[in-house]
Image 1 (cartoon, rainbow, N blue to C red):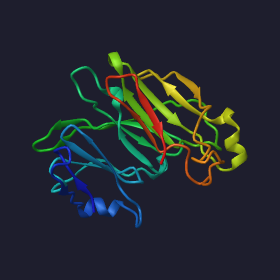
Image 2: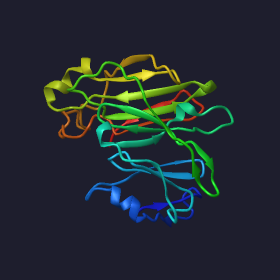
Image 3: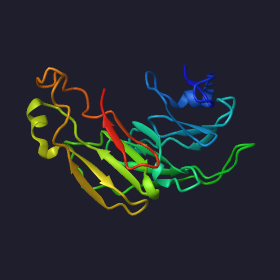
Length: 223
């Protein structure tokens, strides 16, 4: 079950999933959710995207499934599309090796009408098959400056993780034509609290990238 709140957690309602939505979900696979404005978006691993404004009483198909584009592992609001006085207006769909920006193209909310959503691949820095995309984050910072972050490092073995030359986060501060730079991670969580080598190398290096809107502060963390 999925529960959604419009009131900062003061009241939750169960999000209803229609037969059309359920049909797009594989057994054992979970949908991904993001809220932008008054609309709740739901994406499936097959890249089908739906939208609702009434807690799932009705769903509109925003984007049909597209298996050839890869399995979606992350859905989020693209904060780089926010502007002073205006909320973000695009979503990001993330696979293991690609990032797509989706502009929903919503014409009206009541009733919910969608006009020609635009799906655009984001040009990424050179990638390595040994280091697929692990995590993506976007940030709307101070003075309207925006950033996109890509963590592509995982820790398959202790030896690889001790080689910090591969431990980095790709960053871009452009809204459209991305120019990528690399920030090397030197002091990272490769040690447990007892200052011993980390015990679980199956967990990706990072699980969260979160910026504080309107500031230059960005947190990269892990469970």
